[in-house]
Image 1 (cartoon, rainbow, N blue to C red):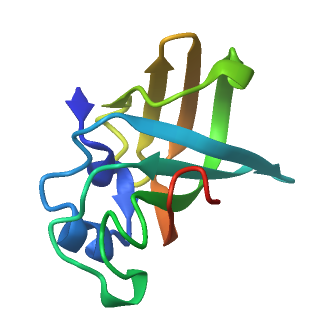
Image 2: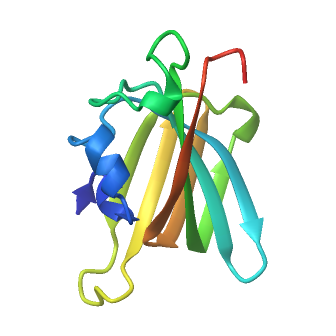
Length: 137
């Protein structure tokens, strides 16, 4: 069953406010880092304008144009092809197990022109956002 990424994110009240319809535009997986014991940190970057301005970020298109959404999870499996060529692309999220909703497992696939990233993980935990102007990180 395909779902929007925000449905796989726990503690997503802030994301619900700035993206009430979910992330509907191409995204970039900007970083992936592993921790001992299956911990995984993912940073998903979007150029989608938030529906509500966040005063501490400044003005969209002037002070920032990319939002990096930082997430943590427990990784069951990961496959990365063409990491050096990753770019903005489509994000597909599927709920893999409907029977055990205590610990849902998701398949997250990011596909851009020359790269594919596939992650099987538990529910994502929202850690926060950062912003930047492209080319001025």
